[in-house]
Image (tube, rainbow, N blue to C red; front, side, top):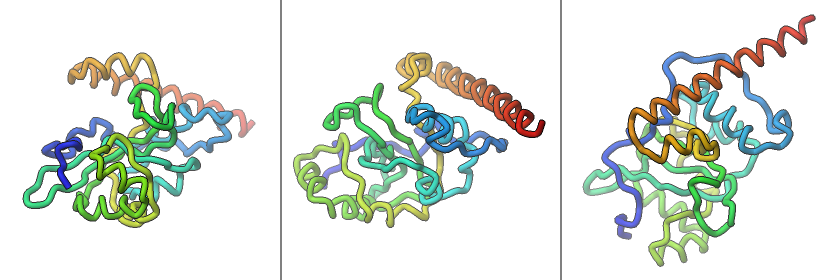
Amino acid sequence: MKTNSIILVLSAMLFVCGHTRAQDDLPYRPFQAFNNDTIRYLDYNFTIRNDQYVDKTVGDLLRDLELPVIYISNIVMQIDRPVHKLVGLNLVIRLVRDVDWDESKDYYIKIGLQTPVDYEDFFDALATDKRNSDKMNERQYDFLYWTPQLYELIKDNKLGGISANDCLFPDRRKLRETNTWEDIELVKRIIETEKANWRNKIRTERQAREK
């Protein structure tokens, strides 16, 4: 299978969603706590709290995730001869139109993998679903269906970075679109500010319960 239709990079450094250095104690909040707001649920638990997943595995993430992964997208391969290797992908919860990938609207979690996976093993795991086989035969890699075999392949792999889709938030999306390091740093500062707001909110909630 040719890989020129797939995103190829030299390393997993593409993932600007890497963990912050110091861990916070922000607790996991269930989906119900967000009144079924999928965007806020994903953002808080998997962007704001991304440092909670330092040295955790893909399986740990998926055990926390209360929503099913339906598709994968944005496959990131490391160029490594003679075999290319998977270093990251998006776990897609929902496609807006169910047929087309739209970075600015779809719900997903972006993950990096600490240990690259041979692409042949990766595509073999995907090919167990005939819908994927048909798409791959036509060189269509925009989104592919999640399979139990893919879960088994990557579940014990430690995460090399994690975030939900920043593009669902207008202020972050505008900065991401410029694709400059300065604006990426601004996105990080926005997230740090939101993280501080969450710390204050949770501290207030805890104090109210203790009264």
